Image 1 (tube, rainbow, N blue to C red):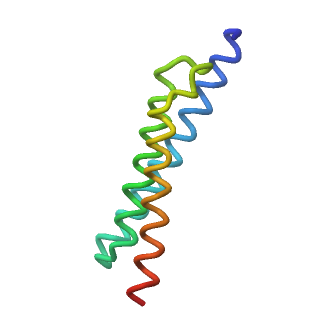
Image 2 (cartoon, rainbow, N blue to C red; image 1 turned 45 degrees about the horizontal axis):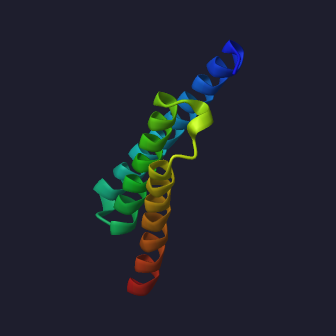
Length: 91
């Protein structure tokens, strides 16, 4: 990869990380106010997605297919789905 592509990758990865962290803090604030488990699960899931972005920035961009990165994303999406199903069952 060229230097420009690496800089762009790092910039976009940082932007994605910041967006996921903002979403995580957003849901943590709502959890603190309501103590609803859905908001806590969303906050943890978005925190895991932010961690995933950090790990992507630390490894080679061409090695994104590392299995642990996909497992981390899968875990985050399972938490989101679990939160939605749990909320609908309690309602």
